Length: 108
Image (cartoon, rainbow, N blue to C red; front, side):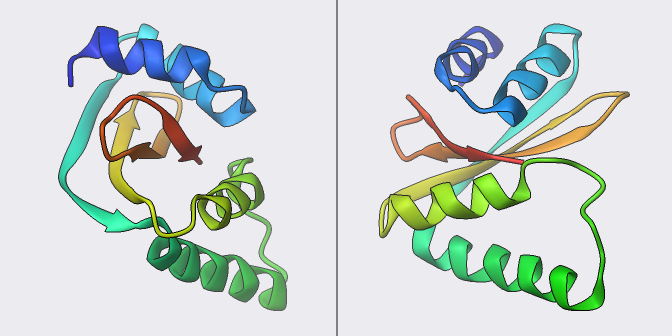
């Protein structure tokens, strides 16, 4: 996946986190797409457990978007997703991209 394709995928996503990731990408941030895929339901289980642990301990995520990402991973069910990152000077984003790399399933 090249920068322009990732830019297009993020631009089509309506989430606040995806738009912030897009701004970081357009500002020249580095990005990396994982080569392997994982089940969205497995990733949902992992991230929802983390979210619950944060709630139980009173930790508020420093970055917005975790709750929406968890909901979207749950909605994706057993679909296979790639994990990707965008790392810029302002923030690091975690993306979950469809197996065919044509849509953003969730971002945080």
